[in-house]
Length: 253
Ligand code: MN
Image (cartoon, rainbow, N blue to C red; front, side, top):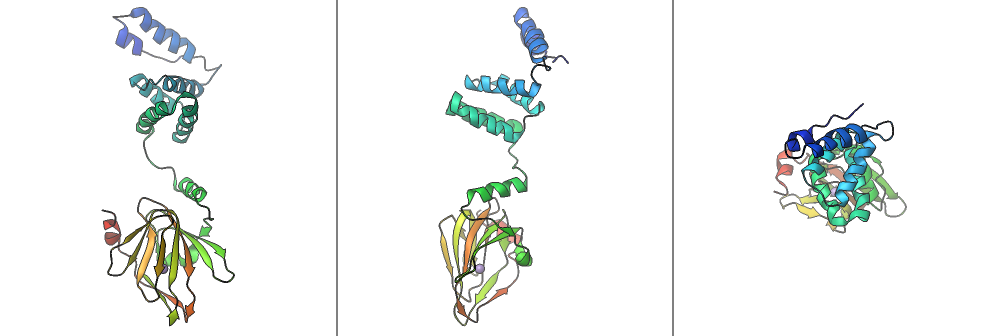
């Protein structure tokens, strides 16, 4: 089926009728319309890369990005196309193209499963399995990966954005407490009566026994820390009430 294009006649019909005709009837009416030779999707891909490589990120480029989206190029595919082309066409041209592509495809994040896989791939430790056994003590979804159970048990705990554990206390008559080693993403640690502390990869938190606290992810970021239970006499955990949404939402403002 022929692609119908009227931009030429509308914008240049009076000034340059031949150019308008070539644009609408030949470029679009004949070349773009040869769908049996190359799909519209592939033609869009070629066109976007050809325009980007010249640094032509003007209104016609926006039109071709919108057409590419219409022709079935996904958000992830355009990101991959522009990343690949950047090495051949030039880094700043790709930057300029990305700014426009972000507007056309929207900046909504990929689905939760894809985000989880991406975060898992960014970590040197495994993400493990859904932390079902402790889910009742968490707001939001967390994952647990036992790294070692011989000698000193170490677990990697991953929190999805917005996930955090309830207020709790690591009790012990002697010794005890918990050490957190942050491995990826951005999170929070808070002791009762103190301001929350932002956590970044590499941060280490020593939580003494008997101190009421919570830990978890930032609202807009995944977060993972290793959790090490410091050996103690008569060690036990006491799980308390959740941190309220109101208190959590105030963080980072
Ligand atoms: Mn703790």
